Structure formats: structure tokens, C-alpha cells
Image 1 (tube, rainbow, N blue to C red):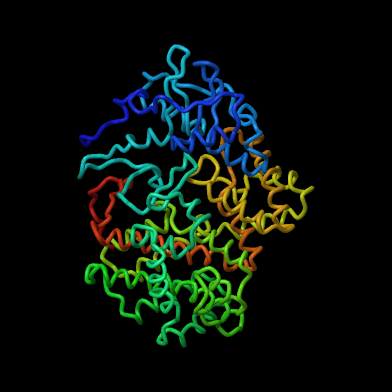
Image 2 (cartoon, rainbow, N blue to C red):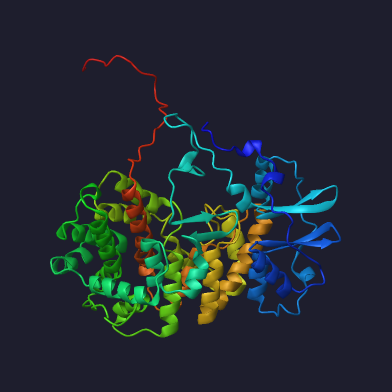
Length: 516
């Protein structure tokens, strides 16, 4: 192994936070939340003297906020997890990691001789658990490369056991709640949030790029109507490939960083226009040109109908788009980086990423979650339908995630967005969500199957007037910003991504038989 600090040689005492932030059962949630915020920690340990008797985490506070109760009059004892598991300071980090991972914890108190001495979080353990093989050595990897570190990035990260993900140094959910898509786009491309002047300059740079090039425009009707059925991502990847070809995108290895950034901006700005143009053409309607005065999300909805959308609908879609810009080394992002590592052009990387996203295991679930709601029909059918689906081995769409083993932060945020929009579908979705979680907890205990982003993404997009055929293309319109940011990063410090495979066929060499 490389000469890096190994998690096996470290103990909890080496990484724990000490002294821990504490609270008492009689204090209010508002007081506890203030302490957590001031100390910049994700939990407070509830104590009786020096003995830990409970723990209150960020996740508890999120659930409390959703209840609508008053934090200044609610006691810590009402929302804490009582009698929490603890760990001793001399325990090795690997054992602590297993404890947190197996139980889905993100924070665990550290106790010595019955007294609280610290708290250790999943984030603490992750900082030291990066163990990499020596260069050139063949190393067995799990199927699907799960848990394997294949590159370094400054763009963002997903911390599945913590229920947290970020773009650069900022919480992605907080960005979705406080910022515009253009500002987050600037963050991913430039490394920092823009000032007011930088935002105006960025807008002025990208808005002219939203118009379909004249060389591409006359060819889009044939693409939109080529097949017996309109398949949006198939049409889109064809249109993107055509655009890159007609605009003479050159291989990443042959252009400078400024030109590659210009290619990336062009594709990101143009993607919503291509999506809506292809969709309208497939429906027999004329395309709607981009609105020069509308921002990204509002313009996206405008190009669907030709009408300026309601501000709350535009903002809801914008929050969804921001929340899906990037999400670690998912299948499509990894595909884009692999293609970029060969030195291919920006268009090739994006086309490949769209191909990966077209698979239903990656980008196709939001509409399927709504299909499930349709199949259930009414709240009184929910428990019977879900119970039969689980017992038959069917997948419950919108629940469970490859990375998150706790609440998906995107789902929590989009649930709030859906509640803000209101409507019968939102109330029904919340009823179904509660029923699914209860049935899964009963029939699949310990599986930690929580609501994922697709469940409420479909609800939000439907409430804002987007047809189901456009759910995954809408995902594409934001994720292209993340893809291209990763391509820019890959090209800036490139090494061809070329893993190995373990051969398991018949042993060679064997004589080649003569033709019969």
C-alpha cells in the first residue's frame, strides 16, 4: 500500500471531536440548533451530568422543521434519540466505521468509564479513510466500482452515509434554496459564486448562446420525427452530436482552456432550447424561441408553451435543476470523464453522458414514480398495493438509493418545494410516502430504504406543467453543467482512464484448431 495514514492504525480518540457540544433535556430545540450552528457541528449530545442519554442531529432538526412546530418552546427531549449507541476512544477507526455504516448513524458519542469524552462523525472517519493501492499494482475492485476512488475533484462530493452533498465548498441544498441556477453554474465553472457584477456579465455571456445555430435548425424536424415513437434522449443526443459537428468542436487535446470553456458554455446554454425544440416538433408544433429577458428556468418553461410561467413554477423548477447539477461520480459523469480522458471533443463527452443517462437505472425514474402513484390510484389502496409489490419483489420507484443510506437531502428539499406548490397530487404523494416507509420498515427491516430524489422530482415537475416525457430531459438540462465542469477539470490535468479487467475464461494458450 502507499505510504498514506491507514485507518487501521488510528483509533477513535485520534479523530473524535472533543470536547463535544452538549445539551440537556430541558433546553429547547432552538437553543440546541444555535449551539450546533455556532460550533459548526452536525449533532449535540444530550447529557445528564457527564453521562450521555441522547443525541440530536441535523437530520432530527430537518424533520422537526417539517413538522411546523415552534423550536423555542419544544424541548430537546421530545426529538432526541434516547439511549444512543456509544463507542470507546480506544476502538480502532475501522470498527467505528462499520458501526456507523451498519446502523446508518452519522454521529456517535465517545464514552470512557461512563463519561462523555467526545463525539465522532462519519465525516471525521471519511477524512482519513482514503486508502489507495500503489501505482501499477492490480487491485480487485467490487462490481460497479462501488467505493473505489478513481480520481480527485474539486467540483463536489456526495456523502451518502451522512445524507449530505455539496458543490465546491457549499451545501447543494442550501444553494438551491438561496441562489439562482446561473450563480451555481458560475460556481462550478469559475470556482466561486459571482458578485452582482460578475452575475450580470455571466448572464450577458450565456444568453446569446441559447439560440439554435442556423446550420442545425433545419435538421431538427427530421431528428424529432425520425422514429415511430419520440424518444427524447435519443433525439437529444443526436442533436447534440450534430451541433458539436457543425460548430467544429475540436478534440480536448487540441484546444486551449478558453476554447474548451466556450464549447462547454455553448452546450449548456443550448441544451434547454434543443430539448424544447425537439419536443414541440415531435408534437407537431413550431418551436418557441428563447425569451431574451427570462432566466434559465423561466425560459425553459416558456419555450414549452410560449407563455411566461408563473414565478412560483419557475422557481420550483429552478430549485430542482440546481439540486441535480452534479452528484459525484455517477454513471453519466464518469462516462463524460472517461471520454474526455481520451482527448475527444466536448460534444463527444456530452453525447456519451446522455447515452448513460438514458438508462432507466440512472435517469429514468421520476416519471416512473408518478406512474406508481397512478397505479395506486387512491390513498386507501396504498398499503395493499405497496405490500403486494414488495412481497412480489417489484421495485418501489422513488425509494432507495445506491449511495444514500439515510434521507436523500434532495428529496427533503423537493418535498418542501412540493408543499409550497400544494395541490391534491402533493397530498397524495405524502400519504403514499408515509405508507411506503412504514411497509418497507416492516417487511425489509434494516434496509434503510428512504425516499429518493425521483419521488418528489416527478411531483414538482408535474405541478409545474412539464409532461412526463420531459422529466429525464429536464434532468439532462441541468446535469450537463456538471458534466462539462468535470470535462474541463479532466482536461486541465488529464490522464487516460484505463482500468484493467480480470480474465476468467478458459486458460490460454490453447492451439488454434485448423478450419474444418
